[in-house]
Image (cartoon, rainbow, N blue to C red; front, top):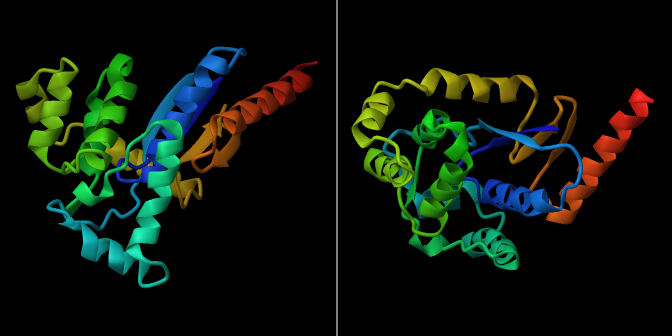
Length: 213
């Protein structure tokens, strides 16, 4: 069963969605899951150097809710599943393109681990995941050659793929993430709990089995 996950590395709910999918996976007793991650840009207009986090977030919510309220939701949801969100450590709202390029360049065997560490770097440690040196350190941690990776990131080797994925999301009408597509035809969105994800997978399996009978 193939699950395509559209996500952005600066989206706290995407981090929660990936984690909950990871928690659901060992409980799944159907056909093997093939999970693919694809890029989505919540705000492609952020410049490469990023914005100051607090003013940017205040402008985003525009007084509809307080910044503390906005950041408290992911914090509480993370605590419930063992994820830490240290929003107070974040000083930069980065452009996420370069982090998606790192993910695209990573071999499939370590891609999910790279994604987890990119999320942790930003949401737990407050690191700027739009910064080349931060991403090189993450790649090196997982055995990628630092200088080769630098050349690939600076040469924008993976940018066409990343931008094509984001454009595909736009063509599919995806306006928010995380967004999950199962076997290219069934979809759900949001940071759903593991038990909800399992129920959806079972419903899809039953539906497809019924079509085969």
